[in-house]
Image (cartoon, rainbow, N blue to C red; front, side, top):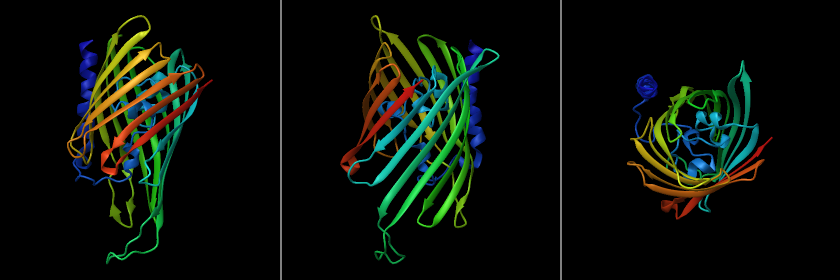
Length: 308
């Protein structure tokens, strides 16, 4: 068991070393930041914590280890509803298909994300107002991962494109992750996301939002059917200091879940979040809310999935 524990920690160390010169980027120096935004309502409600406790296929576009949670084929949509102070539109569609090769359980996944901005106020080099313009970004991802009860691995590849006014850039990126469940009460995992090649804007080099996340999850049985999931994660993107993410979920028989999270972010405001999850058999629904005090509003996350 100790060897497996050490192997999981080694994944984090090797991932950091692999990042090389692109690991220490000035604050705000990465592009295509939408690839590191929360997408699923469950993850958002936990403030991004729980990399070792993925339980929804809807989380797969940001946590490749979510493929280990697929018990049935599932198709769904994640929708991010911004507050009235912005005109963004962020939609993500996902699909997970469990299968086996020589009795070895696997899952394949596909996701498509789209983010659009409208009516952005244009300014020239002298600060004078010009015509409004738009911007949009999208990505398509495919992955494969295991579905073991003890150790799981996952790999995925992503193509992304971002256009601002009439300038565009592309990226070919990958995600990798590993998790280990010590017993039915304790699990830990680590992921490296968004590593790979990114093009430039009009000759200017751009850096992808590569990120490393590692965390522990404890599962505490309470009474019949009820349990509590408590997660603590460390997260670092290439242009940020480490974040400390904490999340808790009270779960009843995988039918009802109440969630809350808190993120300690040294280079921006700390944040609290909350949400709930419902499982109606074939239909899965999740909701998450994250306040944005600086904008006097908040973000609403909605995930709806259909199992078949």
